[in-house]
Image 1: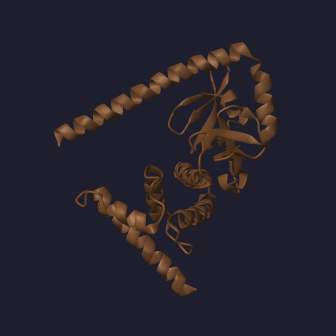
Image 2: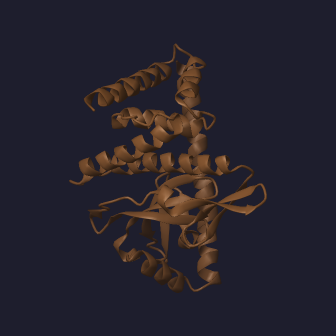
Image 3: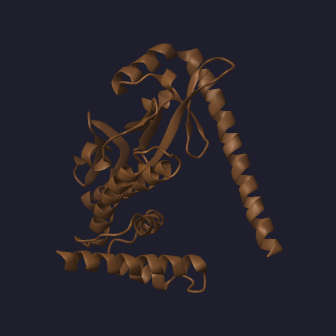
Length: 268
């Protein structure tokens, strides 16, 4: 047990050091950004596009279209030089010009104490585009490419499906960190979006699950992109260590998901 605790502590220490190292590099990048171009012009352009003010320190949901990940980040301002930057939910620091380069803003999750009333979904702003014979790309509204190419249309479509699930998981993480009165309604909305996304990937059109069960299944689909159906998921469960508590919890969530889906079908 002591060895396990020591190993966990070492992993945590390395993770912390890695984040600190990345943040140091990003701090240098922020400094270079403010020295190389007119930062106020970039700031005003982003504020105008989103209809917000960085002075209000909003929280933005961001889509990394190159790898399909979704994060959220709060706008902050350096006390030392008054420069604005973004702090992500993993405590990474990003320069604001990343919003014009790497990341696409999906939603303004929180602004001036108010939460978003609806969520723009990744599936509504991206599409698969054929760029050449046997080559496809995921294109964001406005014609911007994801900078990734796929040799099959189905691969690009799976990329969008995975990104959609990542958005639901990220939204859940954000909502779990706030006590706003609108959280229950937004959790219900997010759970509805997640159920639809899980139903598509697992090929279970009537799938319905409680939020906590859907979240558990969603994380497994993100970590194991080879899972493309309910049968694939069952095989995945069979290959896990049955004695681990995490495996038992996941099997319970999967069985509960199946039970909840059948109950909803009977209600219909």
